[in-house]
Length: 112
Image 1 (cartoon, rainbow, N blue to C red):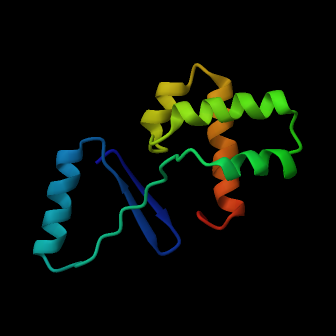
Image 2 (spheres, rainbow, N blue to C red):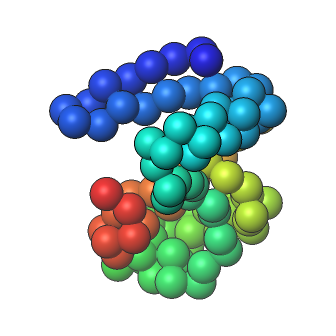
């Protein structure tokens, strides 16, 4: 286990090794502590409605919108996590694209 985070009544455990995570989940099930485990992931999906968000909510220029949409296409099907951050950390425009996409999802009520 790499990190334990407590947020109010929530306990968040962060594992670096997927195998250890799987074994821990098996242990929880075996002990009868939980039957349902929800895996929350945000996966980036290319979405033309994101273009409308950039036009209307952000009021960006056509050129800037095209750039963001091109970056979004490159990020399609990637999961938002620390690994993605490390992968794109040398490109501030990709990072901005992810941030704007998360804001877009938030405003649509898809994430909290």
